[in-house]
Image (tube, rainbow, N blue to C red):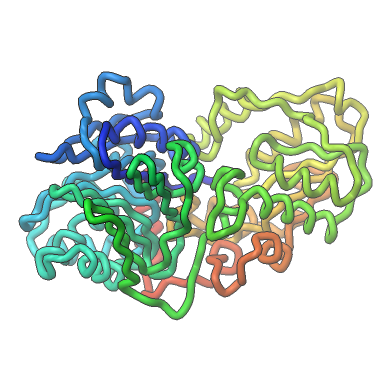
Length: 470
C-alpha cells in the first residue's frame, strides 16, 4: 500500500560504545524502512560507519558494532522516496566538501531537489547519486562554508530547500545536531538519561524508550538542537506562519505506542475508529481488523457500537508490510503470503472490515476476496482515513496520481472494484478531531490537494523523476 520515508536516530553518551545503542534505536524504527540501514560514529579522531542493503538484524553483527567504537553516532533505516536503491544511496551520507566533514541522515523529501541539484551543479558540485540526500548534504556544506556555523547553515537550508526534512548530523568534531524543517512535516523527538549522560534524537519516542532514555519532547519546526560536551543547546533559527505535521504519522505510519507532538498514536487511531462508527454504524456479527494496520481503529469502531472485535485474518509475522516492497508483483505476492482467513470464525457471518487507507485498491480487493473464500456472507469495508486523492511530495511514496484509485473513482466505483457490500471513509472533520491537532497545523495535502509548500515546485518534473525509481 503506502510506502513511507525513513527513520533516524542520533545519540551522544558520556562513555561507552554508542553504536550498540544506535542499533537498538534502529530496531525500534524498523517499520519506517526496510530497504537499507546504516550507522556512522565519531570515535574521537574520525567519522566511520557501516551501511548495507536489508534490515537491521541482518546488517549489524556484534563484531561490526564493536568496531564502530565512539560516544557519538547516528543511524538510519531507509525506504527510498527518490531514485536509487543501492548501498551508495543508503544513509547516513558522508559529506566531505568545502572543508566540511560530517555524516547526515534524514527523513523526508526535498520537493525542489531537482532544481536545487542543478544550481549546485552549476556551482561546481559533482553528484554520485540521484537522491535528495546528496542535495541536502551539499546544501548544508555550502552554507557552512559561508557561515562557519551549523545553526545558521541549517537555517539557510530551511530557506532554500522546500518540502520536508527532519535530520541528524554528526561532525568531525563530535558534535551532534538535530533539525526539523520550518513547517515540521516529520516527527523528531528528544530523549535524555541523566545517569548515563545520554542524549538522543529519534524519529519516534519508541526509539528513545528502546535505549532506556526518557522522551523530553519534540524538536520544534524550524529548530536546530546541538548536543556536545557542553550539553544541549536549542535554537529556533527559522519561523513560519503555519505548521504542517504529516497526518499519516497518526493514521498509519508511526508505531501505536509512540507519542508525537504530545499525542499518543494509539489514542488517535482509537478515536478515528470511534468517529467512523459514529458516521457509519453497521449492523454486523463482528468487526475484523486488517492486521496490523487496522487493529487500533477497529477497536475504537467495535467499542463504539458494542460489536465483538474478532481476529478473522491471521498475519504471517515474517512477511513485512506490502507497501514497503518495490513493484506491484512483489506486493501481490506479499499479500498472498501475509494474510489468511480464519474460516471457522467468519463462515456465514456479516463482517465489518476496518483498515486505515485504500491507495491503489488492489490489496483491499484481495483481502475482501480472502474473506469471501473463507465463507464470509457480507463484507462491509470501513476506512479510518478520508480518500487519498492526490500525490505526496513531502516524503510518502505514492508520488504519481495515476496510482491513487480515489483520484479516478468515486466511493461507489471503488466499492465495486474491491467487491465489498458497502464501503465508507472517515470524514475530514472526523480525522482532525481524532488526531487531536488543529487542522491548520496538519498537512492534509494528499486528501485536499492543498499543498503547504512555501515554494512552487515543478510537480510534473518531480513526478517523472520520482517515478523512475520503480
